[in-house]
Structures are given as C-alpha cells and as structure tokens.
Length: 183
Image (cartoon, rainbow, N blue to C red; front, side):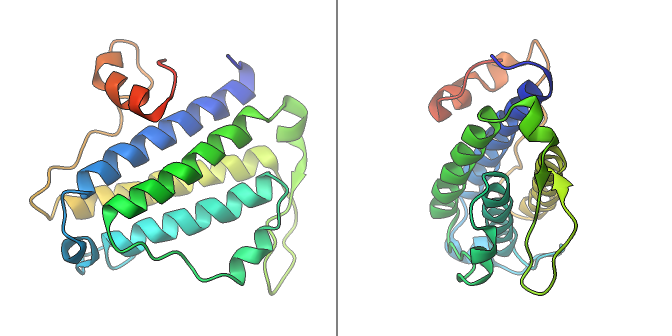
C-alpha cells in the first residue's frame, strides 16, 4: 500500500470512485426524463452535471497521464442520457484515475503539469495541484448533484463514510463490487 502523498492520492481516487458509484447508483432509479429534468444548480440537470464531471475528469486525467489532453476540445462532450450508462462511463474513468494515481511517485507529483487550452498556454501547475483540483472539482459538483437528487423521490446517499475507522461496514459491499481494497 502506498504511503505519503502518493498514498493520499490513491486513497482519494478510491474515495472518488466509491462516491461516484454510490451517487450514480442512486440516480439509476430515476427515469431518463427525471435524470434530464431541469433542476436548480450550476448546471441545469443531473444529466448535465454528471456529463460535465466526466468530461473534466477525462481532460485532467489525460494531462496528468501526459496524454493529449487538448484533444478533448476537438471531441464532442459526453452526453449520457441515463444514470446507468453514465455510471458505467464514470466507473471506467475512475478506474483510469486510480491507475494514474497508483503510478505516481513523490517526484512525479512535484513535476510540472500543463493543462493545455485551445486559446492560450497557461502556466504549469504541479501534478499534485492538478490532482488536488480534480478531486475538489468532483466534490464540488457531486455536492450539487446530491442536492438536486434531494428534489426527487430518491433519497440521496451518504457520501462521507469512506475514511473513518468504524464505518467499514457502510461501504464494504460497494468497495468489493468496485474491486477496491477495504481501508
């Protein structure tokens, strides 16, 4: 098991996958119409929010993996119309993020990482800063989706039972289903 900053990012990637799985599994009880229904938030629907999260994840993961992140701007944005297909796509992205975090070293986390834009060249950040931002972005928009879900008949799931000892039973089955180690 990785320790230090690498271990922290691996743990955050596992938490991220679990929270996405839990929230999108709850959303799977919605019809595609309910998933796309207008709701009050930064993005106008659960569908738009989750598709945005996935697009940004793919962009940042490409940048951290030293792949061609700029290509994301030339591809159509994802538009999964229902929570089940969205969950499958997000799970694949989350697995890739876990692998990228597991491949990091203290040196690679401190290395420069450029987030290319089609209209400008921003200054480099560190790989650690990009990963920190990716997780913060996920938490930010998952919180919005969680609030939007509360306006439906589906009860929003708890998303903060991941790290503390004594709460393993609350996540054990989901972690096993995702192929993630128990903490």
